[in-house]
Length: 196
Image 1 (cartoon, rainbow, N blue to C red):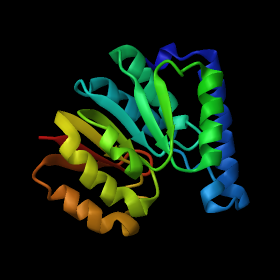
Image 2: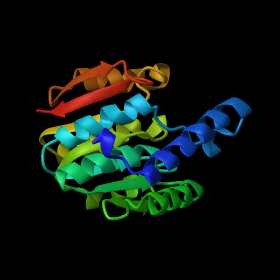
Image 3: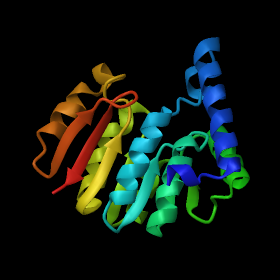
């Protein structure tokens, strides 16, 4: 999967990595920054997505589409597609350009809007990647878990880098008997949940 990436995907990933680093270093305002996952987190979520049970594959928080490019690899080998939700119009514009340049529009469907407004359209979730504003993590978790198929995987980014903001949610999830959960020390910390 990782050795089969096209030159276009590798080029766009590199450009997004450089821009993300530049955004972090030059004081770009918070909501304008890409704030994307690390490459090792990309590999991590792609492996989990490829191994997830049958069901809808969703991403909450697209940004410019970097994480969706990793998930698209899992889609290709599992015969599924990804629906990714982005609330900010400028980020959705960037993601559309990313997906067109990398020719993943056959497996990646972008929904521009708030996931919370679209949650009723989502059923039988096999995999979910959550990387949105931290103040909506708990609401998203509460809405997704009942829609997950047995064995489904939910991964939430920033479990260690934003631990102070997420601590009450993390405590709840780690004690939730509907899932088996742990925090993996990959990238910025990944909360990994498997639906029981």
